[in-house]
Amino acid sequence: MKHNNMVPNAHFHKEWQLRVRTWFNQPMRKKRRRTARQLKAARIAPRPVDGALRPVVQCPTVKYNMKRRLGRGFTLEELKEAEMPKKLARTVGIAVDHRRKNRSVEGFQRNVQRLKEYKSRLIVFPKRAGKPKAGDSDAAELATATQFAGKLMPLVAAEDAVEARAITDEEKETRVYAKLRLERANAKHDGMRKKLAAEAAAAEEEKKG
Image (cartoon, rainbow, N blue to C red):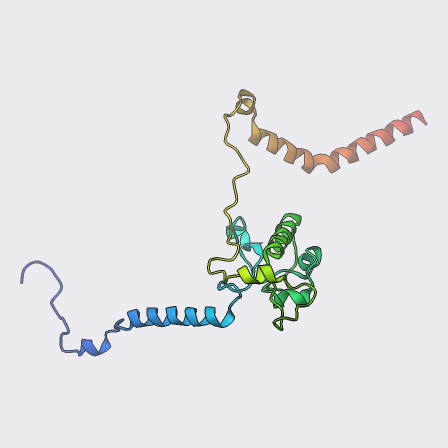
């Protein structure tokens, strides 16, 4: 033994082989998940493999509210604006969420446009073959219809609205912080200044009277 080191005290008498978690079933689980996806696609055919159409929503909280993601379902107002009955929507692969509210006009219009685009691409099969009803697609479209296997109308990254430019000389000379402090002081003393001005005007009236 040299130096001031810890005294060796290794525990090698435990049956550690019995306490190790292995992952030997990973390849078989991968195969099982793939088989399950194929069976589900065959079961829901000719509907899209990706499932129901979802709206584009803004993430909550200050940390994430600049990001967009797919939401739970379309609001009743969005369906009404897109002329899609709420009972029919679920039957043609559109998710509906009666609890969500529209907080902005931009988000509302974006989802309405998303619904209209989906309706233009939609092919509706009749419930009974050979007995089509109003709203069902014609025979030519049905003959060419295939199951959509990719992502159903995926999110598109929003382009930056602000363009980079050089700072002007006028902007360099502007003292923004001083201007903000001045405006804050004006807002703070606005009431007192109005009161003093009113008192001064009243005193002038008394002198004249």
